[in-house]
Length: 331
Image (cartoon, rainbow, N blue to C red; front, side, top):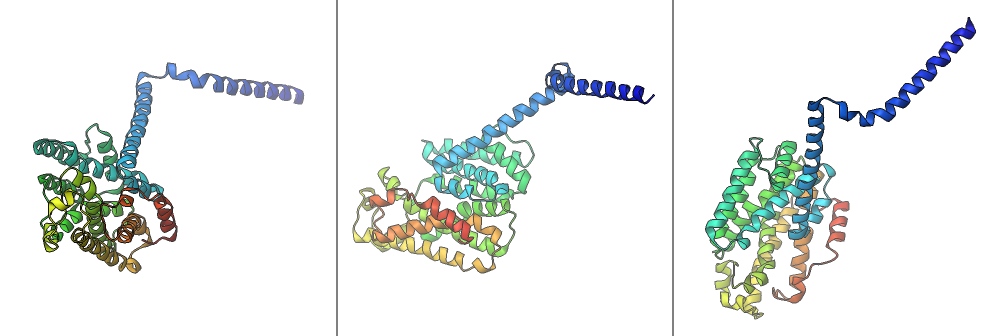
């Protein structure tokens, strides 16, 4: 009897072994006999994944090529916020390049309207089929980003299509607050930070970034016979637009640059005055201060000659400096 049970048990073991072997060999190919609805779902899932990867790569590429400093800063963010940061910066790049890429204001206004409509559709869970839009929608769903900040960036960029110099430094600061600071508010939200002191710091850093961006772009804009520096400061030092268009390095032009750069420095100092009251989780959003500080130091070393060739070259040590600042958890 015992031997019979043993034999049966052995036969049962063999059958089970054969069954599992067949299962391993056959099941990978069993998709051909699945119901059509299951096959359809599998294909949709595969297509969705491929499309998502394409959208992410598009945002990475456009930020890396158009906003390299922002790209490196985004890589140093916590993994949970990294992809959303790149989507937000890609959105900002798309808006920023409208002004230089259109020949007529009407076309620029149409593109701005596209983005206004896109934002509204994103918040209705119906984003258009466009890489940046899809990534923005993903970021909004994940972090509950505030629509007002996105619309404010678009509206301010739209006003900037007027293509004229800022009347005074306050107008440049207002533009910077509505664009660069709004972007920082969104980055803080993607990091899960809701703190009034962090918002104050973001406001000042955004203004400093807008001012520095205006200075950095002066040689490029001047080569296209365009000057956007605040007119009140230019008039104060008797520097004409023609002085900048011909790349003058006279003292009055340097004085204009000094006054504008000094205001950016003041905003950085104000932003850092809040550091003791800001949660450490907010610091990664402010890594751009490394880039701003680097430019202000370099322009000071060349005695505020905004046309000096050294200022047109990217500092190769910026990625290292950003990493160190990130490691120290300071800004």
